[in-house]
Amino acid sequence: MSTAMNFGVKSFKPRPPDKGSFPLDHEGECKKFKELFMDCLRENNLDSHKCRLESKDYLECRMERDLMKREPLSKLGFADMEESKSMPKTS
Image (cartoon, rainbow, N blue to C red; front, side, top):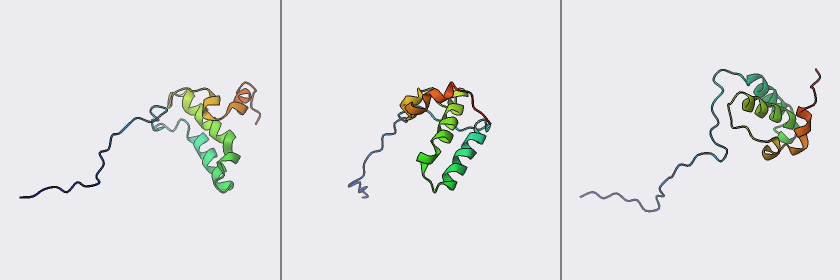
């Protein structure tokens, strides 16, 4: 007679992410923005606050290419940077 001892085992109920799906960028459409963000993190000892512009650009790229649900920048923590999108970027 064998019985399973399941004391303390919790059942796992998967749930979707809060912001919906976040598909992988298989085609590398936003790879340039991801690499700029990762380089910034490395250069700044993983201080993401110093890489907000790169983070915003990466998320905008993903939204423009339907790789994530479009959200207002203010909901993603960039309310103070929303106006910068309407201004042309200089190289």
